[in-house]
Image (tube, rainbow, N blue to C red):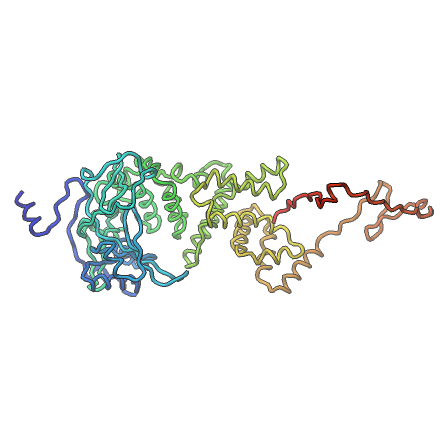
Length: 519
């Protein structure tokens, strides 16, 4: 009792009885941590400096510090501070408070494609489940008004639905998931602050959960996916106690909103380690039922072999592009994941007598309704996917001005890359992909020459004889029989046009049949 009174009097944080361990502050200097300052982001350092100049604590935090310790250049830089979101926002000209579950601030630098966002979070207090408001439902269906900045809400399973209560840095560190993500770096003093042995774990290449793993997975089931992603991305081993509850806790992912799982799936697939991520999902028993879009890809069924090969080629290409610093589009990868669903529906509709182009449109609509739904299928992502798929039959039409028109389409490159993947997977004509590769690299005159050369290579269509005994000359024209040649030429009668009906006199015309050609 006296110790608690003295701790309160001296401003020390109270020990948590039910939350994760608070740990002990350890400051590590540059001689020991060895961080290369040239890997720092100038804008992140500026955010820290601005907050410090205003009298607040501020540190680069989380995965950025972990990557710096490993000698890697971080993709993103986050900052943690004891300033509230409102206080942070007031210090920067372009800063925006976002989020309801956790309120954070996005500080924006630059504009357009070159813009950069530094995410700033406020130190959070350790959650005491007994003090939180418990509600029915889960993250999928929980709704609450906007004025919730100081509430703590959990569902019946212990899932944190909202938590915006601020606390000291030592509690903020305990709130983080893995020890290697609970590290803070002060670029001004060049010290790393470590409460849970994260530096040691980083050097041992070990992923270890802070606190009881089962409890932490219940708080946020997405941590199950994060541990897989970090293990694949970093090549780390998962500590046995951290790994043990994963399969049992995986059922909790069913309560996570589909949009959030969708985002996590793309983090697995678009960070440059997608094939390793799929292997880690399988290793941890998460290869079926977690991400429905990946079930067929991760299936061992023989009938899915073609799909697996196609998607694996797409993922390998994505990993290569990320490694080379090139951009990758979610629409392209999602189009690859769902292509065989579209292809099966398209073939089925054509076999039932539907014309090719309407059949493809219907197959695409069916896939969006069944597999994508409202997550992304109705926005720009869905529009780009449609364009990639609808472009595929157009590549087969290489006559006239069609190729010249197709190559001017904004999504041509994505459509062509998709065609090339299909050829590499053995489901398309390799010669067709090579022709379009040559065509795309030439100027207009050379392109027209390629079209003309292709036209000349096409076999001439000969007229069929009127009867089995009909002869054909060298130009494909019918040669008349001798008696027909001797007979006098018959005079042709001109057919008189029938008088217009009342309907046609009124301006109505017969409707022409719709053009069902693809493209």
